[in-house]
Structure formats: structure tokens, C-alpha cells
Length: 261
Image (cartoon, rainbow, N blue to C red; front, side, top):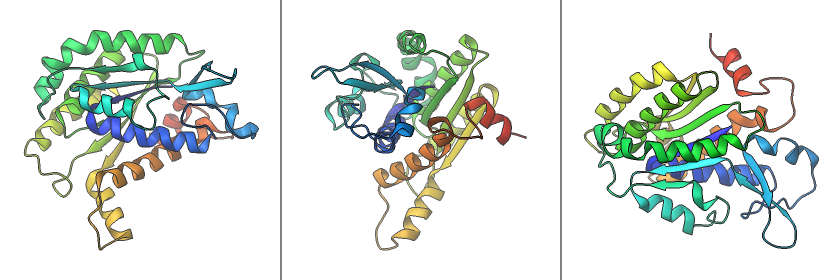
């Protein structure tokens, strides 16, 4: 599976997702395996590519992931954060101007200029797969990059790889969590692309996440990193059957077949 995280929300949720994966598979923040449990490493290659480590001849596992944003801030923060050494530096792609919460910028102008370089990186990731199951895209539908560039990316992926599974984790906006006026417009404009191009769209409603966090701790206002952690738990839960041995839903296609009537 090739993971693509788009926009600020996509990358921040993606970071929480990879942290959770490291924990479940016994990897440290450099991607080196530090425990001795066979089931943890048997299916590591679903989300990770194995490469030679820098020192002490230990093998490293790096995420099979592409990080995309139309402004460099989020990607820079990821690279300088605790997981900076985990990702390959050439898998970060960022623009200069940002999308300014504008679907059209992400889809037609700023995003369209980046799409070729994004596909170059995606193609390299695909070439390192033995048998590509498909792609998973993490994005929010409220921002300009997540909705505009996210949906452009989906239509291009569908064009380039029509026979591969395309799943998205799409975060729906809510006035409770953010007060950007144009979020509903961005969402409506990108929903059409989701319906057309994806095989499986997992909808994450910001309001429901907010309520769930709020119920656990009514005294405080839930923060984004808590919501992201919650989404990461859902994502690791959904992908458990790909990553550990089992009888059911062994890959993306089987899961979609069982879930979608």
C-alpha cells in the first residue's frame, strides 16, 4: 500500500498514524526493529520498505509514504520533528504559496503545477512494491490543499492505475472545530471526485470526533492533536487485518468487497 498524505490535516493525521504503526510493530523512531516477535514483522512490508541502516548493520524500515502540501511549513515541521529521521527526504513535496483554503487553487492552479512532481515520487514508491494493493490518501475536505489537490490526485491515480484499489481517509469539516467560512464549499466540490474515483472512502466527521473527545473529558476543549490521535487509532484499526496474520480481509480488495454492498 502506498500512503499519500495531503495538506496540513493530512500530514498531521499521517504523523499520528505512523507513530501508532511504529508502536504496534515494535520499531523505534529511526525505523529499526527493537523487539523479537515474529508476528510484528511478518507483514511489515505492507506499509514499510526495508532499506540498509546507516550504522551497526541494522536494517531500517521506512514508510512507503508521500507527504504533500502546498506550503512548506507542515512538511518542514514533520522533517524536524521526532519522526524526521523515519521518512525519506525525497518523499516530501511542498509548494510555496499555499492554497489559502481555496479549492480552485489546490485543484487548478497551485496544485496542478505540483502534480507531475508528486506523481514522479509516487511512481518511485510503486516501483519498490512487490505487488501493489493500492493507494490510501489521507486528507481533509475543509482546507484548500486537502480538497483541491486531494481530489486532483485521486482522479489522476484512477487514470494511471485503474486496476488498483483507491481508499481515502477523508476528514469532514465541522463549524464546532473550525470556523473557516469556505469549508462547506470545498467539501461539496471535492465530494464529487470522491464518489467518482475512490473504491473505499472512510469518512471521519470532525464533529463526531470532537464530541467523542469531549465526552471523555468534558472540562477541556479537545485539541487537534487529540482528534488526530483518535483518527490514527481508527486507521490502525482498519488496517490491522492487512498488517497481522488472520483469516479475514487480508488485503484492501477483500476488505472493500466485504464492506461495500
